[in-house]
Amino acid sequence: MKRTFALAAFVAVSLILADCSKSPADKDQPPLPVNVVTVVEKEVNEWDEFTGRLEAVESVEIRPRVSGYITEIHFEAGAIIKKGDLLYVIDPRPYQADFDRAAAEVERMQAQEKLAQIELDRAKELRAKNTISASEFDQKAATYQGASAATASAVAAKNAAALNLEFTQVKSPIDGRVSDERITLGNLVQPGAGPENVLTTVVSVDPIYAKVDADENAVLKYVKLSETGKRVSARTAKIPAWVELGNETDFPHEGYVDFVDNRLDPSTGTVRARVVLK
Image 1 (spheres, rainbow, N blue to C red):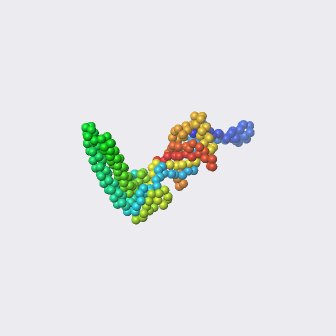
Image 2 (image 1 turned 90 degrees about the vertical axis):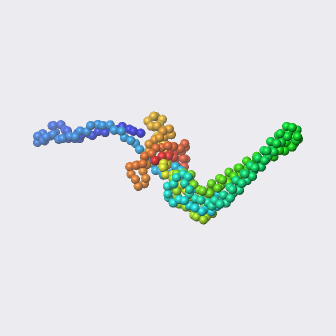
Image 3 (image 1 turned 60 degrees about the vertical axis):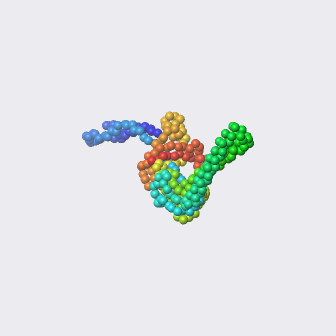
C-alpha cells in the first residue's frame, strides 16, 4: 500500500517582528537569510514485518522398499544430487533369482496355453463334423481358458519380481541436497514407516518457502484494503515480499506470496502465509 504525504519546512516567525519593537541599532542590521523549502509530494511504502522460518518445497525420506543387506552407497553426505541418482544398492541376488524363476514360469505357461489353443482349434473342426461331443468340446475350451489365465498370472508374478529387483537400486525421487548415511554398508534394511527405516533424506534447494504467521490485526487490515480496492488480495495475486535472514539487513531476498491459509489458528490468533523465494 502506498500513501502520499506532504512534507514542508517553515521559517521561524519569531525572527519577523514589528519594527516598533526593535532598537535603532537593530534597524541598521542587514536582513537575516531565510531558507525556504518547497512543499513536495512523495509516495511512501508501508511495510509489515513478520517472523517466519524457511522450509524446503520438497522433502523426502528415503526408505527401502525391499528387505536385504546394503552392498553399495553412491553419494556423499551433503552433496547436491539429481532426480534418479543412485543412492543405495540392496543385495539384488535373491531378487534376481526370483525374477529368473518367474520368467521361466511365464515361458512354461505360454507353452501350455499354446498347446491348449491348438487342441481347441482342432476340437472346433471336429465338432463341426460332429466327430466329438459337445462336452468334449467344452472341456477343450475350458482347458484353454485355464491355460490363458495361468499365463496372465505368471506374467503378473514376473512383473512383481521385476519391480522388486528394481527396488534394490534406491534412487532419489527429486533434485536437491542429500543428508548423511543413516544406515551404513553391510546392514540389513527392510521396509517400514518408523524412523529406524530411514536411509537418508533429500530436500529441494530451489525454490524455497518462507512461512510466516500474520496476526489478526494485519489480516483484517489486508482484507479491508482488498475490499476497498486499494490493494489486490494475496489469494488472487502474487504479492511481492522481501526476506532477510538473522544475520542480514535490508531484506535482500525477493519473492512473492503464493498461499494464504483459509482459516485463523485459534490457538495463536494468526493466519499462515507462504512466500516463494528463488
